[in-house]
Image (cartoon, rainbow, N blue to C red; front, side, top):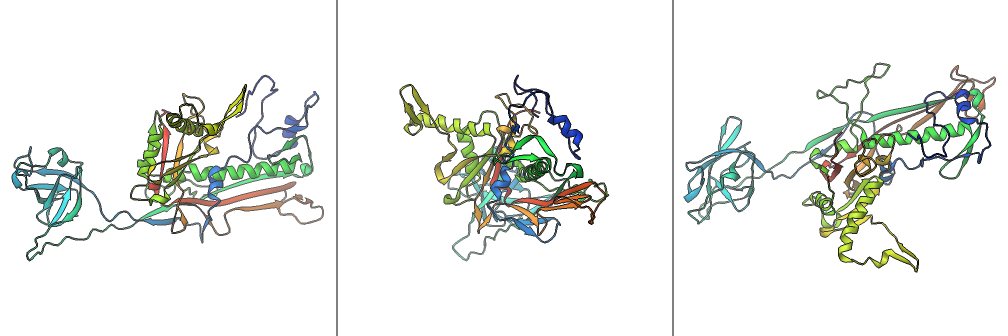
Length: 479
């Protein structure tokens, strides 16, 4: 990705993959001018591109016995709203007036005689007078209002197709009553996902086993690398971890509707890919925005909390890029300015001609116990993969916000890494003429390669136990 930085840069970076030979090294290592330093500066931090993986590392990985698909179960509220598909009344402009009965048609059979159901405006409701009958694929009941007002009626707009009803209670007489209300049930449903498998290999030619680098490489932890094989090992490990981390977020299932898979490896075997975090979030909880506000972010978190989380466990993390973090900071700063129009003394420092304004808001505590913390997601700032520009600068993914409930249920995290016992991270080498420990002169090798191969393989998945406990705020930018 790095091309022109400024006019001090000489040349352009060269990229390649696969086998590295001394031809490659010669093309990147020699120049006819004196070196200011024999240490190469890495432009991007190698340790900073697996944010979700790092966050999930604080929770134990759940290990499966095999690499077959994995599943978990969810169960919704036993109570349910039922879709209205129409109504029939003698007076269609005033259905139910003067205690007149009328027909209410629902999507399915769910209620029974004596149930009192309310409409989208709960000030209006009706008593169900019979057990109903099938009308095509729908179910129709005779209903009547319960009110002392002879002029009252149900507004027809509440009875239109697409509106809903829910049971509030049942009503029975206090004399020899026999119209009992029933119990509502909802079955559990299954969530299923596939594990994803990935691999990586690199080959070290025997003649480069101890080949020195003309230009050294300084790692983020301060180590200076001047041997090619060590540099190759660090780069392979970093890319391996980055690819694993990105798959947790961005993987999209490749399973066909009939349960089959169309992708095949070169050996003819099925390639399976499960859903990553973003695909597991419910589509109804993906919100597009033009002008983001703190109130809107809070409203989304409130919807993820109401009747779902206790008030003392409503803690959310927003994973976003650096521009998203700045946006979050400025939204809070705008609200703080209303309370501290002349500035918050905790952020002011310095004296005289050296005054300072410091600090960044990364946490918001709102009403009803909702706590929102913003966290940097390096994958959203990756300049290689994120290329759709944003009119405010940078790229659209820099502003994207993935909101997650990071709490636990019965001690189990809401989001967790999945792997297979013994196959989470496999690393091995295949010696030819050389091994990582030196030439194998007169000793047994495993291949005819004049060098050795290093192989990586992993099997992993991710589970978002409740897809309705997470949401996404996405910049409304056309492709």
